[in-house]
Amino acid sequence: MTTRRIRGAAAAVAMAGAVAACSAPGDGGADGGASAESVVIGVPSEPDTLSPLLGYGKDGNSKIFDGLLARDADMRLKPALAKALPEVTDGGRTYTYTLRDGVKFSDGEPLTADDVVFTYDTVLDEKTNNTAKSELDAVKDVRAEGDDKVVFTLAYPYAAFAARTVLPVVPEHVAGGQDPNTGPFNTKPVGTGPYVLTGWSKGEKLTFKANPDYWGGAPKVKKLTMAIIADDDVRATRLRSGDLDGAALPPNLAATFKDDDGRKTYRATSYDFRAVTLPTGNPVAGDTAIRRALDLAVDRETMVDKILDGAGRPAYGPLPVDDPWFAEDVERPQDLGKAKSILDEAGWKTGKDGIRAKDGRPARFTLSYPSGDKVRQDHALAYASDAKKAGIDVKVESATWEVIEPRMKHDAVLAGFGSTGDPDFGLYTLLHSSLAGDGFNNMALYDNPAVDEALDTGRRGQDPKDREAAYDTLQRELVKNPGYTFLTHIDHMYVLADRWKDLTTQTEPHEHGFASGPWWNVEDWQPAA
Image: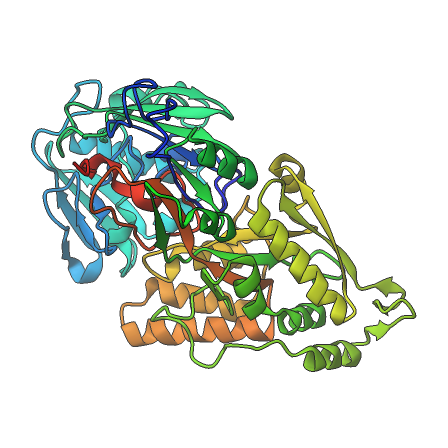
């Protein structure tokens, strides 16, 4: 799923060699030297809210909050607010968690099981504007047993449920008296996490200080600033000038820092893909023959080589080619001849200007991408160039998300999606017809009964073979009737001042910047010396 402003790739950098001459963002002054206690990271976007009740931090690493579980560097689930992984009984329908002793919220109040129950009940309340609540569809009931035990009862066995409990837990004594959609908790959160929000200047920066009483130990990085810099080129410039310790950049810009002393480049594989939404209500983009032709007309390999500088993979569907759930033999090379044949057979005939038409309607539609996002811009332009070779005229336009959003149900968008952990994560919200046009869910308004059935089977199935068959069917249906043109899966590139030791990255979802990159576990960083 994609959110309004959390998009793009990520990178981070700082000038360790220049800090003696000028003040770097992480130091205490021109003559203080670079500090490992203060970090300024440049990210391309900011969240709409900092409330988990509305979806913030639902995939973990939120900095302000913790979930019952978390993920380690290898994406394995581990205990967080819970003492241990859940006890699973009743054929996969009951999950019991016991809370860690002595955990407190940053305001000093203790964490209890009632806070967990409040969090999940509020997220699932139909009055709460959380577009990700379908991800907890399996939850029938959640109840507290004493102060330290939480029991989830599921309506059906859901193989991936434990991974959903990385959802951050919020304090009932603070958020319980507020409207979850409009209350002050959305911008002034209180959590159990390693950091406490100290300021948020919208469109500029968010600042955090270390939580000295964090149950996992006080972080060595005492101050964390997330600078909001939407434009990739500007972010790179500020990074190069030493204004930032780190920043989020597309691969081609990150590559320009590879020879800089004092900086280290990190590369994270991801499920993050770029795709063109093809809304069913659009008279051209919604035509199945147009969709199939576009799917064959695009040169994915060249996009990876030229746009991503090799830092990615061709996308033949929503799952990466190296994912265990990826269906065999669905890779599709560019085939302009077949694309043209499909259009000819469907009655889209080539005109004098080279653009096809059918029943007097030219094969033309608009493709929007968010301003300042160079990766999406380059994908959009390459897509339009390939489409024109098949006789389809794609008009590329840049705009802000405030302009793009009202048009999404009718116009194509160069979108980004991708979730880690299980194929159900992301695929259901991307493709299920019940979520068509629900914000950024199913932006293409895709409606395919065979895909709906596969998604339902994959979500509810317990037998791995049945689930594998369901997702195999889904991927093959997307070849026959694509609601999106899948283009590339992007590796996320990061460059960071080399002042800390043994940093790692995780396999990342689409949404990153705040929660991903080598700072996914900034609370655990140790100074290099």
